[in-house]
Length: 92
Image (cartoon, rainbow, N blue to C red; front, top):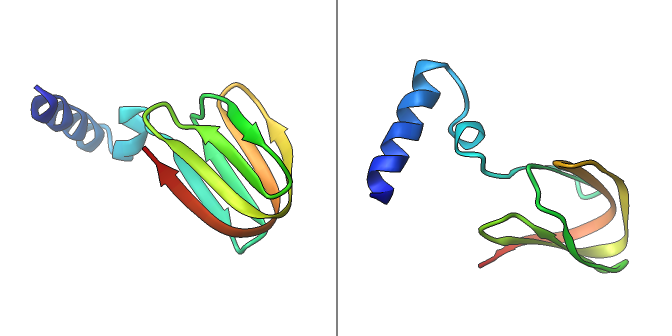
């Protein structure tokens, strides 16, 4: 069943010329240099400190490590973090 779902989503993405992650509703992440982190389609903040921020990505946790991390902005599905980013990891 999971294979079929993936094939349907990939087909829809191709048909409408859209990125597959957008069609599947997966989080979209961008890191600019080592100072800015952007995430779309998040499900909230799970933990927050100046050295570590855990973001709920629904099927995983996206953990941002660094120094002087700050949540610059957050809406229903987008967030922005700034600071000296050392590492970003996915935690299942």
